[in-house]
Amino acid sequence: MNDKKIANVSFHIVGVAFQEFVMKTSVFKRKNIQ
Image (cartoon, rainbow, N blue to C red; front, top):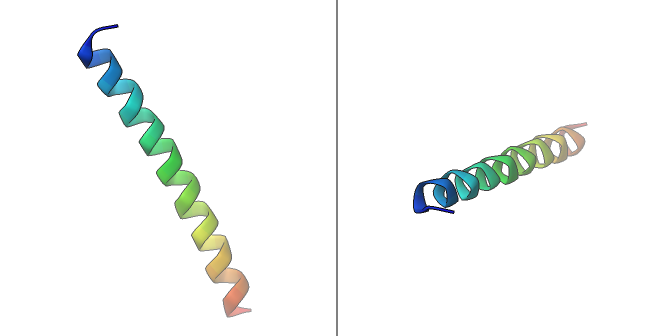
């Protein structure tokens, strides 16, 4: 694997993890409001 491919894979992993984090925090906030 070359550096560019490694960077793309790690960027994708970070993006997916960030999306999951945002979804969890938005659900958590909604539960607190109710």
